Every structure is written in structure tokens, then in C-alpha cells.
Image 1: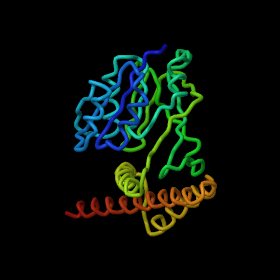
Image 2 (image 1 turned 60 degrees about the vertical axis):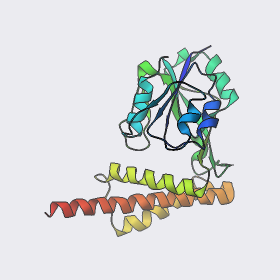
Image 3 (image 1 turned 120 degrees about the horizontal axis):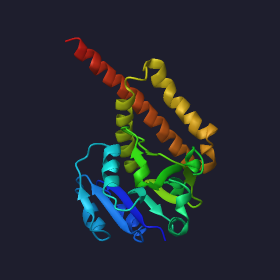
Length: 252
């Protein structure tokens, strides 16, 4: 059987972390890197592993890179706290001949308010999450960071479960945070004006709901498409705000 290290970064993930860790208790090593949780995240994590480490938050990429550096096995499975490894995926990871590739993409079955979403582009979500530590590094991005493998990449057959938004409060909190990071990252690359502020969220909604077939998920697909449009609207407004602040500072 393959020896696997699992890495997870956390902050205030008490609602998710038990299910996540329980789904990987078979792993040879579990590493949880926490950035200062004020809920029960750390105490729950310590029920599954003694490798719960504090690391001051410096961004998603740096946090995941630090977690990766702590792994003792070459094969590493990186998870978010709101993801769950199914039994079929577990068996595939443990019993397959992983040496045919240096990294593997894993399909995520994405849930919104408890409903599996097949449209909105969510039904074809493959993430590079299982890889050789010796061949892998993080992309240097503020948001939508990812792993880069220097070698051949394969794809596993079975999926993980992703419960990204359990309620609307959680959804709005996350998109507010992610839109801020995206705006910071893109402020020098994107032009923002009245037309882009109005049209970008409209196109975002139409893309998700019609082109990516959000309508097949009924009211849930409509919700996801609206949330996507709101995210893009926030990015536009925040880029405008950043550019305005920069312009004002240059006047002094």
C-alpha cells in the first residue's frame, strides 16, 4: 500500500474539520497547519493527529507550501477543510500503482447548500491534489492558488466531496474575502469603468447559468450563478476602489 501524508490548512473550520479528518484517518500522516483558530478547530484536529502546527497567515499559497514542507512521505494528498475523501477514492489512492505518474488530478463533486451541482462549470472540476513532494511547488497567487508538478500528471477515477457553501452567510463571507484577494491580484491588469462594472456581472451570470448549464440544477443553479455574478461585481468595485486610492495617493 502507498504511504500517504495528508496536509490541511485551517482557520475556524470547526463545522467542517471533523468530517474531513475522519475521511483520511487511514493516512500514514496527517498534518494540520492552523493560522489562529478561535473556535474548536485545533482541539478537533488533535483527536486525529498530534501534528497540529500553528503558522501565522501569509496567504493561501505560502500556508499550503509550509504544510507541504512538513510532510515526511513523498506522496502527499492536499485537502481543504471542507473536502471529504470517499471510501472508493481512499482505496484507489492506497492500492493503485501511483508510480506511473508524478501527480494526479482528482475530480471534486461540489455541493451548494447540500445540493450536488452538476452545471455552472462545477461538474467538471478536477484539482491537482495528490503528488510527489519532491516534484511539487505552489503557484504564487493570492487566490485560486494551485500546485505545479514537474513531471507527468494522471487522473484518478473516483471523486472527493466538496461542501464549499453550507449556507448563504458562509457563501457571502467567502465571496467577499475571495473577491478582495482577486481585486488586489488583478488591479494592475484590469481596466474598470462604468461599462465593465455593469456588464461583467451580467456576462458572468449568463455564462454560468446558460453556457455552463446552471439551469439543470434548478433553483440551486440559479443561486450559484447569481453568487458568481455578485463575486465578479465585487471584484470590479474593489479594483475601482484600489485604483482610486492609488490615484489619490499619487496626487500628494
